[in-house]
Length: 145
Image 1 (cartoon, rainbow, N blue to C red):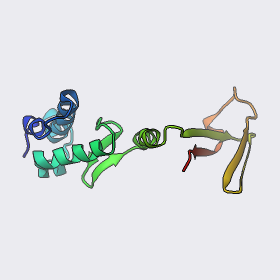
Image 2: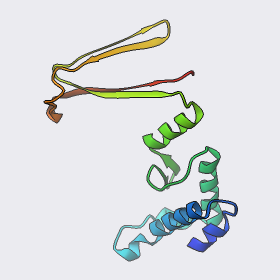
Image 3: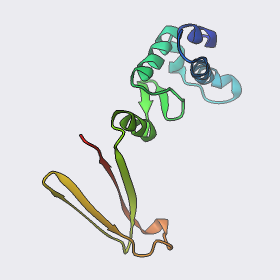
């Protein structure tokens, strides 16, 4: 079983605040049972060296392991949409993200012409949105790629 200090020791050259935050994250998940929470038994199977490798893998992507948008699971490192979006902006700074929710009464259309997606979203009444009237959602990502 690893100790928080061992993880930090395995991360020389890393911003001390990032190493500390990561070590605390790992230690917290290991130690949750003693605090009345359900622990992650799989966390105890990792050594400090293995956990440091996971931190470094995230670092190699140009991201910072924050324990919120980038987390650990029994299957490895998990990235949520915020982490993917951050990576996209890092790799393709000109990227434009547009998303929306389509409500009953809205008009929405999309087409593809010569490899380009064209879409239009007209709002029926933007000031009277009811969750029960959601009929769909969309996300469009544009960049040079």
